[in-house]
Image 1: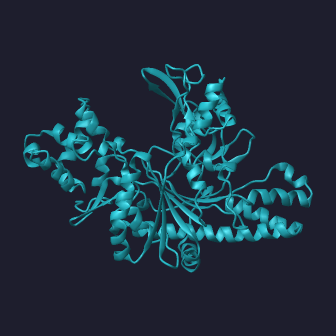
Image 2: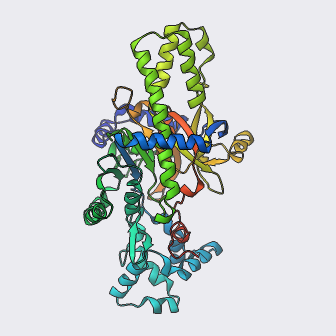
Image 3: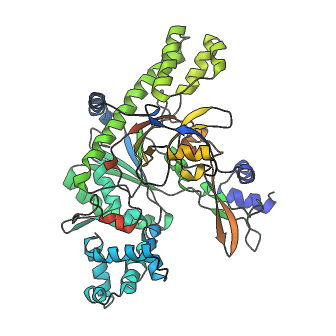
Length: 509
């Protein structure tokens, strides 16, 4: 399959031969689908908490969280081009009814966007007048100045660098909103707030410049020391492109073609973080200050829940590490696994000796932990919590994307139709074991859960592979809890007009 030149190219990319061979097998044999057994529902895989329990866990956060090193991990490398799809379509002459409606709405409310003054200034610098352009409905010129290098170049910028919100005359980027939000729930006793953003190499300088310009004023204003790190996706997490016959796709000169491996590639970045607790949240899911309260409270609750479970779990692991436990104690641990993590033990388990049972329980408990906030599903397209059966017949709780479900199968489609929760990417994670040593997160990936899609290059069709998603297959073998969080904590910006919703718009009416 691979020539000597291929192997040299793979090693230069940082991709091991075994990994390249695994991708070859995946593209030949993997349908990209999982077998969902049923949706995870309240009381059946999804935790709903009463007010008393919430208050108790919240107290646990207040008493203990500041002793932990907490890092907020924000994937921020994605380009914002899809945010402006309707404007692109209009500019290119693709005038569907929905496009025209979206563009008209955008221009009717243009002055309400946080980037309005910056856009107006750029248009003036180009020798034009925004009011005159709007009066003439010269939308093409305005769109050019917003999206291209003639002006703000927003189509090429990542969401983190876009002006999202306005407070009076002050505008904030999505990057800044994550700083302000983090200081509310991710500070230690010394008022250090740690954040880690993954960015594209071509935008690293711009993020660094924004950080250097803004951090001093935020630290002075809020009395917090921000410790900010940036990283880029590792080249070794890129994947091989394949032709339609499942052989490696090649350039005209015979070289292999590599493609970005999706957000699952960020597992390597996450693995490099030194922290007791890590939040994971998407760059566009931030809101105005006046709507942050629910987010802050739910984050503290998720951390408190994680700490309670982790402390209990670590207590059991230390006991098992030091002595052979009684059958009564083993039964207590079994109950803990069932009730807190919905983990069932194999039928053969009951026939094992006490020592063998203890070894299995130790292995089940000694894993990374994630608490995943889930919101009530409305009309969102995307992933959610499900009970999933793997190739070994084991059933576990997993976050599954719609694209991973075989919608042609009525049983599988019914599982999706009956799901009631949506994954907003709101995770709190514990990445260290009971001895304080970091887990190697690559040990807990389900490598069968690659995403495969068709793309094109130079007019030729290719199969593109994305690594198992960061919160999908990449965390398949983690200890997992799904917990309900308020819908108000979920305010993503998928299209530019989402910035006109009340969570993002100071002028909302």
